[in-house]
Length: 112
Image (tube, rainbow, N blue to C red):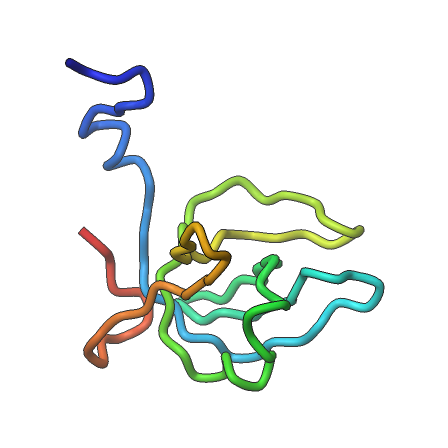
């Protein structure tokens, strides 16, 4: 039986998931959770604000290839604009892990 939260394939195809490479990452002053992350997609770059400060040190993110929603509408957080969303898995015990790729693919590669 279909759930109300189920989406159809056309809706899913509208979400652009891509591989991004973290160029820079820094803690945001006066925020307990947010990191400001600059991500390259090969042909463009974006700034993403993410609530992963309690799980990752900024310097540990540099060079990581992560999975990002590239076509999310920008959002304002703490007077700054976030231009995408990185994806992470979390469990019931409060652990969090960024979604990454297991092989070296070029930034901007699409997830399908």
